[in-house]
Image 1 (tube, rainbow, N blue to C red):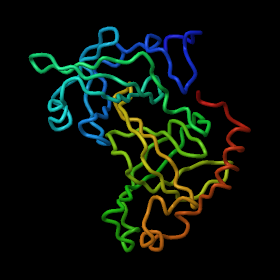
Image 2: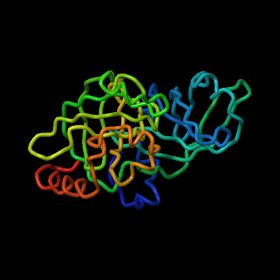
Image 3: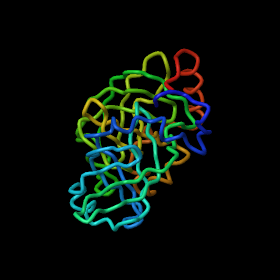
Amino acid sequence: MKSSSSSATSPSEGIDAHLFDLASLVGREIVLYSEQYPGKPLSTRVIMVNNSSMAIDRGKSSGLIDELINNQKIVLQFEYRGELVSVNAILNRSANGQCTLSIADKIIPLTRRRFDRFPMELSTRLAVFNIKTFDPHKIGKLRWLETRTINISCGGLLLEMSSQIRRKTYFLLNIELKDIYFPKFIIAEVRHGLQSDEGGYRIGMEFVVNEKKARHFSQFIIQSLPESFFEYTISQRSGIKKSLSAGMPKNR
């Protein structure tokens, strides 16, 4: 945001859109949610910004952007200076088919969560955990990737990836967090992923706690996995929150 201002409202109401430098999104990837394809994220690229009007690439998302009907409501999500934000918009199509979004007056931060985030670069190993094709006999053959976190909280983390990852994808994580107790393995769900200013992707994940595992997995999968994968509890999460808060500056 350009600056803090008395004209900005509370987070629940949103922040004045004119405080954002939307021109900085040109060339960047954004995500749309439309009335036409409810619940389906559509990725596209910003071509041009003119005040509260944003022209987007109509050829993205396997052509679905170009099939969007004129004058429908759109929910737009993008990362702005490390924060995931959302804004309502109206899709306008010109006679030649160009897609333009008319941005609403208020932009809503989405990453002001229950849990404070702390800037920490931690070595992290992760493996995709596909619940649809899961085979409990092949846990030892998971393909592990290595990356580093951007920030972490007791409830999840943000890390850098070279490619986009779909929401609701599950990963098995091994995080090297020293001086603070943390389970050797933990399962996390991808909640959002957007292109960063550096060209990679920032992937936000939420940890699955033991008490809520049944919301994510069938009883068959839960019984097939090692108990250590669900070691992380709400009580442990509260303890880690206190440990992080005691020694590190918050990432606002």
